[in-house]
Image (tube, rainbow, N blue to C red; front, side, top):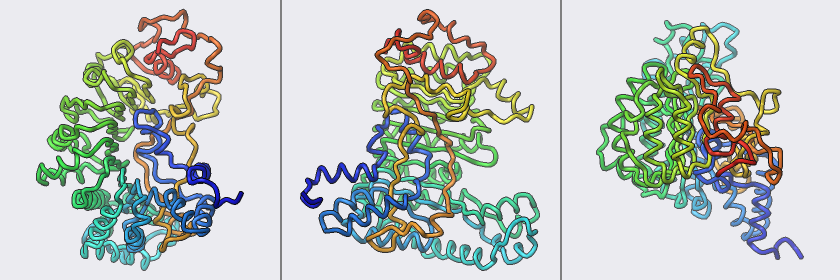
Length: 519
């Protein structure tokens, strides 16, 4: 029997084996969801997979329609003439646009008006900076200005978002090519050169966020998830002047919000200025199922938790995460208490407890009162004083041991299901990105621009594989006599080691050993 005689269902199964969509595999309440999707840029298209799908689609109309579901499920485009042209090309073909579920918008730093005089700067650069072409930078500057002034990005985004009738997720990524990075680093090392050239992320982030938001509203898009790994507080502040109804309409649709804020200076005050905006958004977001709000690991936020979350209770929330925050134990317990009936996953990454608080109090509450909790992530948690002492001594915040290292004990972890595993245990499914083609058929994966430009990551959400080596059917015990008291945690209130936090994660959900597991 020939391939064309196979059923549609069987062909879909075959295509799934060639190129699967990880978002179909991971629900928002799973530990791997935030780790894999929120702060991971779209993977580059795999050459073999892209060619296989493209060739499959050229066979006949039926195969073309089936392949398009995979080839166009995720679309990535750059803020550039070329990227916008590609996006408009896809939007103009409804039989392709209707399959788009995730749209990633890669935005470069914006050149500051009046400080884009690269022709004066580049001749002064030393040889060590590299061979930078003035004409190349001037083309980028002219392109950026023209796109903004003509509002070509606004026009194309409105057309595209309207055409993406199955859109579920929008992501804004910060893009920095190698030459821009070299130029930025050199200028930062020589303050006097700021008068000649300055590239900034906040205006770029503000512009892209606003244009995307207006396009979502104008199109009445079904999109319900928004994420950005390098969101500037200043860009969000621009929304404060918008009518409250505008924000409410966007927030009401959200089921997932994943943001990582970054700013060079004074992050606390900038986030405090956003307090009124966060109150409007979070109160309006009645359908929220998953939330993650993060900050730079080396600069944990010091605001009270409720200065951002305002004691909001989301009735449908199943997964909640924060990163890099200095908190009291009562703040964490208070937020957990509001969501104890439905919360299944809790991520407390890079959270530092202040003096007077103990992790054992937080963990005891989670274990005893969080009736639905399936997993908890405590990666790099610590005590504030110990964290600050490390920085005074000039030590970097140590990451967890890499997978496969002698100190990596992940093989003994408790995660029982494949879809509960973290990022490195999830297959690296390569999704094809429709921004790599100028017309419908094959993806041009040899595009040099696509190979050199990489979006920056902000969340560094990364976890080792989590599945026990020992079969679950064989009893094993490492809990020192099934001790339910907090004494087994050995929390000294001074510092938290890697092995401690791994044991704590298991203890909270009652899976610290297979023999005595109560969940």
